[in-house]
Image (cartoon, rainbow, N blue to C red; front, side, top):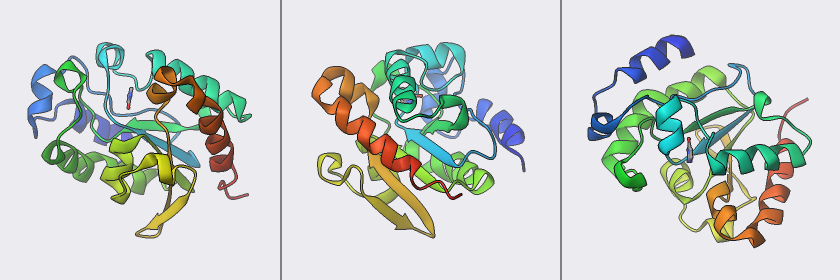
Length: 181
Ligand code: URA
């Protein structure tokens, strides 16, 4: 299985109700050998229209944060816990993200085999490492099944509350330190 094959399957997926409102699936993008993977919550309107992750306003801020840490977004593999946009941008439900992660995200992680996975926001953090309070655990690393994870605020949170931005930039810099030489 390659990322391309898996993406084709995801684009046709009907395993959960989220596919009903899909314009485009948003599988994820970035080099297949990225050392850092970033996982968000769910595609929004712009992402659904284009099939690309994090290209709306939170995506623009994400690019800025990555650049402030001396990196470029093209170095990252970027995706979310579900590949189809939830109606009215509601949060994905547990049966939706559990199924989607089982079919796609866990396989993407296996194929890419990153040094560290940055979890953007509460939904991704809860779905992947079972932790709830991002305010308390952001910037810390956790190991699950031999993989390293770090929770960061979702860039959308920093759009609402600009005071989170310096912290998000600091955590992004910390994430970079986990790339193995
Ligand atoms: N927010 C996310 O969590 N994922 C996207 O792809 C876009 C916005």
